[in-house]
Length: 593
Image (cartoon, rainbow, N blue to C red; front, side, top):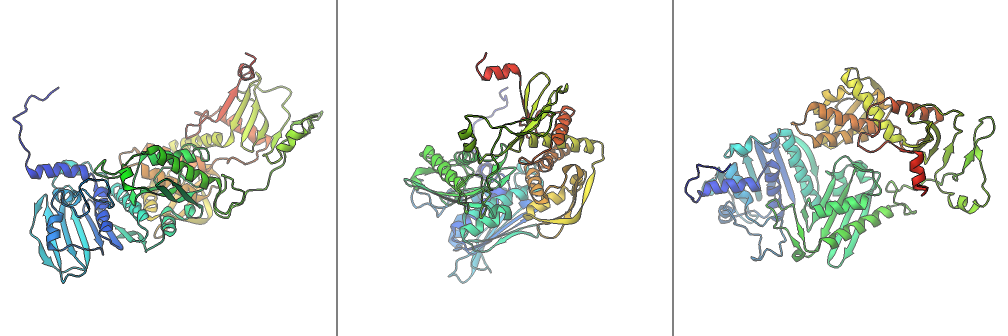
């Protein structure tokens, strides 16, 4: 319904215009942190320190040792659309992270801003203050060479925006992610980040490989593959983790274009396509990619956040990224076989497994033996490197079970069963057991009786400090699921017990996935939803793995449990656990119908 109380058209006061514009540029503390750190990088800083209080809501402080500003430049810096970063007016060859001249005035319009700066050759520093858009005169003061920016009470001047901020921990996570992305782009700059007096990371000047390894974590660092590609004026370098290293979210993907961290859909799609055939659906690869191209081939003036781009030839960029990643994944570092399934540096392919044989049962139902088929010698030789298939004689009378009786296991991953009506059933043992474990844990949680298994020796898991803090903040909830953890200093987490239903999974991958899962949820997510997501992650880590050989009794028990378990047709990630082919389906596949 259109408004009925519209008055005459008027020009808004400048302070209101500035506050409206500020909301577009600075939507949360992480955006202010990003803009201030970008200014420090553009100023040639070699060391940047960031400190946050209450996730940046109460205070943000960014200190750098860059060029600094004199009194005249300092006064101009808080004026809207005043910038020193554009060499001309055509917005084509943009070589700096910032260029709009909006960040400082936007912050000053929404918060209490104080800037102290001093050029290296100046005798003293100068300071300027802006509170809710009101600018105080520049004044001399003491200060080291470089610039120190302090932002207090973010959005005090725009209460409507402030009340929509998330919990301080959530805002701190977003701010940390923004600083990590910028630290990834500038390895030659030392970065330090503190949150509420706690150091999250302190990185020295490093080369690109060392910086990437430091930010992605030890598991990914041990499995990084070099990426290199060139096409016309486009060039890509960087690192990609082997397919064995994945994450529950895409947070561990660092994408940089011309020195600018971005979240571009063209690049994200290219990464997903390159990994599509080598990682499980729903998992996300770990990459750190640096794309360079002529500035005129790129438009960064799409959004005030400057995280979205527009490529002149998006198809060429996509092809370059997919090709470079595919080559890296096809020839892992240290893997002379060049097989895409290698696990990372220094990992060799396993020895070939025995040949695949067709088998038949001996009279009396004894163990099967290989059956040589005349005329098929060449075919059998060609399959000499394939994983084995193991067959068992079907019972004389097939039981009346929906999923039938197991008769074989192929690729050490899939169970073949035959139902009483002749249907063929193919079961993914890992996906099926994942669902069974999920439902068992959930039932125990609802009954308030989750059984935990204390570890003989408590395990210490090293995590990024933010991930450790995220897990420890939910320690009480995780204890309800049988996972008992406690802090062990820094980013270390001590694991004392695991849910008994999981068996004995490795604690480190489990905790990393749980931390990623919790990072995706915020305080608005219901506790039950967070716990159910955590159960799904635990179930995946505590299930029978693909590649494990099962006995006939184990396979039969798995099928019977599936028949008695809710939602057993799909795993916790929504993938099917079994496929059933009726006689009609098989005849249709062979063209008999």
